[in-house]
Length: 219
Image (cartoon, rainbow, N blue to C red):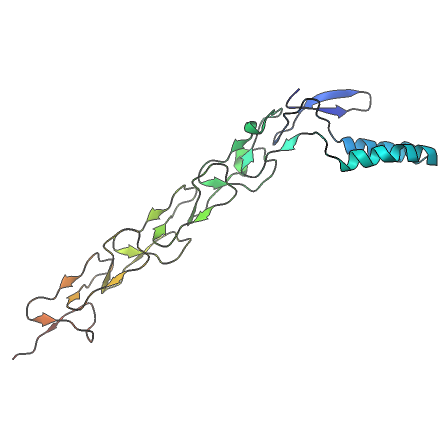
């Protein structure tokens, strides 16, 4: 039956369920066929040359040709119950997690993506890094968040964004860098979203820091 495999017990054959982490959709699947013929060759074929030559073709055929047996659930998948009869029986790791294990028998093999990484798909074998302008400070997440206004991030795999320094600003979310205050404008606070105009009678050129304006000379 599907989900079962034939096992030679020494006194006969019996069908046993595929172990957890494995599955079979083949009727008449055979367990460890190559090892059975290898042991038969060594125990019987080694006694005389005639028996050896008789069993040698069978040994070669069953050792180097595919045989039907329970298959492992691949990376990103797991199955906790025995007797699985289809690849569809292998469950996918949830979003925000990944697994590189083959033949996994528990959901616990699905690891949460670390901070700075995410995975939006089920059944993943790796996590994706957050890109510049993004952040993620929690584990097991499916999407990165954009940097807030007034902040930026110019690197990948980051958990937090940095505040724009004095004299710079970020008026939009998800920026990889801050913008310098233009001439004639200034700000004096970290994390600013805009720059202020110098008041009447004051100015700022490229010789003056971006956090202040200077009074115009009289005359």
